[in-house]
Length: 508
Image (cartoon, rainbow, N blue to C red; front, side, top):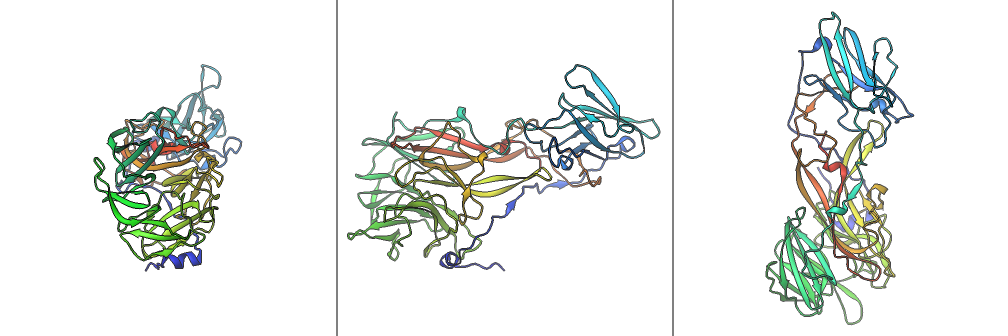
């Protein structure tokens, strides 16, 4: 039985737990046996220990395709691994010959070595595939295999923001002075303004940069920063009042009658708008729409400048939680804490915060953890926090990460850093949208048919379970909208980022 707690109880205990790592697998699996080439079969293949080339290189997993005569590591070695001098271990049974033919490094000549008489000779895999010939014990059957050691040509786990994929904001204005992008379901909405003019665009195809939009009329005194959306309606604050509209194509704004100075976000469970109002005495109160009990904003809770709000079904709470990061306190100071709302109460839920700041953007995005002992990887769910600005308005390019739903934060690995082409900026909005990829659109070093493949662990030499062929998979992309520099200049840009590995043909 799962034990869950109210949010205030979680906050008081300051729970911290690492997010569980997820490894993807294919539920449709099969076993493949092969008897045709038994007499000249390769039962296992591995590289010998060679720490001068790569630590634990002897644990790299090689797949053996007996039908097509191919041996290869489906998960490539790290970029830059040297392949010129690699001794190998070849597993066979009752054979009379095992020969390896390869190109001599720096020449146009091939050479052949006998593995049975010289098992420790180094093989050059840098010049291309190596020919492995195995002859049965009776000498009647010879089987040729192509052995390829694959190495990544790029850093696979880098969060890559392709310059050629950069697009302009979907706006008729050459120099918009405000932008706010939000998502609801599979739809992205982007509101831009220039002076007294406004435009609202929508898209269900961010990868294709397909937008529909038109100029719209906002209520007088509208704050573009406050623009948000639930599955049912749009919301914006104008002159201290919350306004709503139902249509994104032609929004007709009406006042809700609720005073509100700042919108934190939407509590997605019931579509409630969460915000605050500044009282006449300078204090702040928490308010919602539809209206619930009004309570004071705690002194350590931000009243403005918070990140966008994310929602999750927490494994620790009775109810789903919506949470935000950073922001400016009523005192004028900034915070780096995570604050969450469970449908009843607010609480600070972080035990290790980010650097205090405002206008930080957060998104839920999977990351990769590589096991350097087996050179395999697992996918871990994470929350990324990107950019923002300090109390004095200086923007930054800091990327922070949380693996436990916003409770503890740390600086992200360098391969998740923003490139210089994006640089420092605050107030960006992040939307994650997945796209189905297939073998034709993959950017992997090859397209590997996994059907009829016998996969062997080098240390076991026994038949193991193989996954069915993968022809398409879901790839998550991050879209970064707008943002501003230190002077408040708005970037008229949309950047698309992806961890390189997610565009490769999956091999596990």
